[in-house]
Length: 509
Image 1: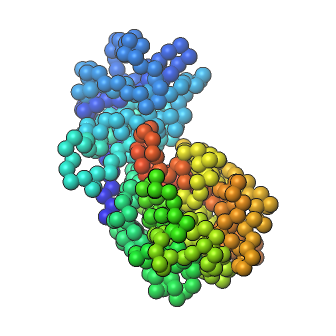
Image 2 (image 1 turned 90 degrees about the horizontal axis):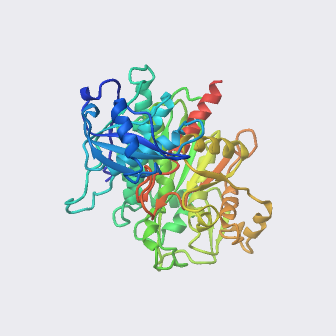
Image 3 (image 1 turned 135 degrees about the vertical axis):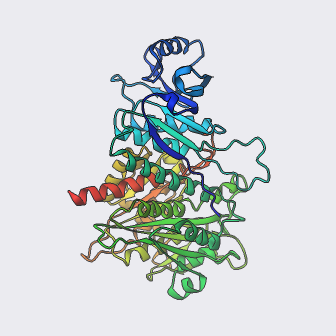
């Protein structure tokens, strides 16, 4: 089902004519006095000529700005591409994220070109990694439902990074990791972009199996009969209104001597009409993306397995389709969740927290070191943090490291509190709690609801937990930017992967 796009990454040094390409990309930054041509492999004479032409060409060095020129003899390429990297710091250094975005933007805009050489400044292996990741994420397209591809340009297939680290012993794992990151992010995007006619609970479970082929992971699927029998009231309650019945998918990577144990729970609402509490028609088509959290945790665990990280990582995909019908749950219904708690459903459009609650309880029963759930959970997230910044809430011991991992990965997250006064608003007259509460601060209220289902560890204390609301950043309705295309973005995969790597680093220290 998922036709992924992947780019071949390599590194070169020395004479560019020995490694010919269709396009050579060099960087232009926004300096205090105008555009600045960054370090590049051109001859001094050619570089001077290009630098003097920047203003005439209308270039400022702004991010996402590109300009094509005829290739130069020493460039080894038919086309010379000037790519903006954004503002230049006072020390003239570029951040890893600036490099990642510049590389991704250039590769994205060079669709239709076969081979690209990226000659952006790389002062360290970390810089090379950023350029490679950007390229891998920029080389993406989603065309599998087009009957004809006339006029559509294929993503770049080959990227060579010009760097002094081309012969470094540490380069190979850097490029391998970048390729795996790109594969995981792009697979997440392609799942999010699937039309709901083709991606529904059963086919999502099949896609998980397909993506896991060849990796040392175990995939277990609960169908509606097993879900009903074992008491997954949240998933069944949300999914029973659809003719396409719900699923729970567990994807487990368990190396024999794992030094940490992480559980990831993802919201997988393959389409969300709102149920009986139906949504307005305008914009409802975007609700095909309401399964982004499940796609994120699936591909994160597959990337962890692909990298062979020494951590037991389990993804729980809580999958249902929220539809209105004669069989659908109603406002005022009471559900018995997995684990026994009861929830009064006051709004059937607050369905994500119901399926997630079941998944969090299931994850808790395996006593992981930490539980992280990822969900396109609330419209309130967009109101609070906008379209590009995810909200993270929960235990300080998890949210702090997640924020640090996101910063390192180049993704935007922001910690939000869980005020205790929000909990009473979830009280129900007839059940243990209601599925909606205080409207203002709704992102936090939803997280307070989820916290009620986080279990205790073997030490009797609540398992460290964090909730990431990606309602805004998971789907891009605006123009493409950097390495980010329209529609599915694949956000949070890199943050979770960096978090797991940090956990392993700290456990080894």
